Amino acid sequence: MYYDAHCHYNLLGKPYPNYVIASVSMDYSSSIQNLNIKSKNILVGVGIHPWNISKGEAIDDKIISLIKKADFIGEIGLDYRIETPKEVQIKYFTKFLELANEYNKMVNIHSVDSYEDVIKLLAKYEIKKAIIHWYSGPTDLLKDIEGAGYFITINPSVTFQKKHKLVAEKAPLDIILTESDGGYVYKGKLLEPTMIKDTIHYLSLIRGISEDEISKIIERNFHKIY
Ligand SMILES: [Zn+2]
Image 1: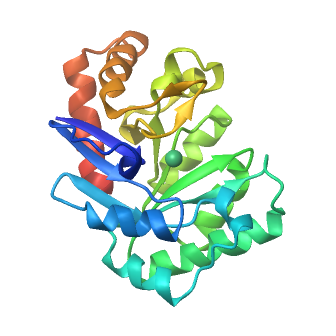
Image 2 (image 1 turned 30 degrees about the vertical axis):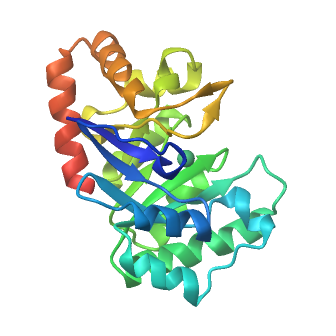
């Protein structure tokens, strides 16, 4: 079994046997799509991605009713490279954190140039379970993430993305998960769950542990958070 802790499975539309997939949503309509394909091996997150705030997506009763049916909340977060003002993004993010507490859900987070704020807000709202996906932030924050009991995901881009590679080299093994961010096109290439095999191979090389051992660690971590 392979474990994909952050994937846009609704955009891929084909089965991946031998994969357990956590499918995140970008907005209300993808949340509906994902809930319709929820199954034993497809866990579903409901959320509004920071990129979609400017499109008028609202945290209203409609999306809250979907959160109740979801396995977790996501994709939510803060992205300080986009035009939507920080204050607006923080308002959305913290509202979702309140909902996570109210409905006892884990959060699956997008963070770009906002790592300190994300970690600060998770602590402030006393969030127990969180994944910071494709974490490419400062490696000195990894100890805070570990201390809070949170997880990060390693994306297939780890083989060539310098900042992410540094994270994969330094992160404590008990906070690491694998992901594909499947459905998302990165540098002209469609990401897919099947790429996780290569990520495990790569992790085994840079950490000096067998692929089997890495897989066992990932599996254990996945069951801790999901
Ligand atoms: Zn994503």
